[in-house]
Structure formats: C-alpha cells, structure tokens
Image (cartoon, rainbow, N blue to C red):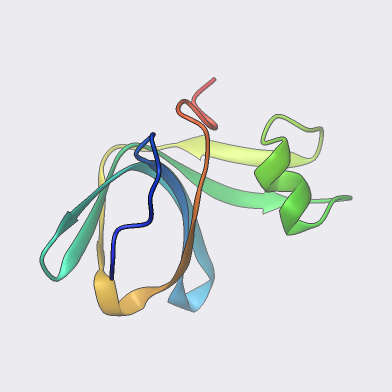
Length: 88
C-alpha cells in the first residue's frame, strides 16, 4: 500500500469479511495498526457516504475499541477522514 497524502493520520478502513473500522493509522510492514479506533458496527437510513460525511448521524452505531491490527492483504480500501473522526 502506498501512503495517501493525508495531513491527518485518521482513516476509515474497509476490511474483508464485512468489517469496517476507523482510527489513527500506522503501516507496519504486513499489518496496518489503528489506534484510537472505532468499529463502524452498523448504520441505517443513510448510505456509506453519509456515514463518512457525518459519523454522528442518527442511525450510525460506532463502537469504541482499543488498537486494531489488520493484515494489509485484508484491507479492501481506506478513506482519509478528519482528525478525530468518530472519537466523540
């Protein structure tokens, strides 16, 4: 994976098998680590782009979790987001 230019280090990361996380990303060889992470557990009434633009919308269920390490080969795509996205 090449580093996407992002002044912040926070990304939403879509992983195989249906997992979606967000966090402060660090690439560690064969793994991606997300600190200050949240699991995007589910959303209703808005599409995925609605979740990205407003993670605090009604119907978005974010669950705070500790650090997550994901094998790079499991990452489908990642989206740079604002620093602090989903932390509140």
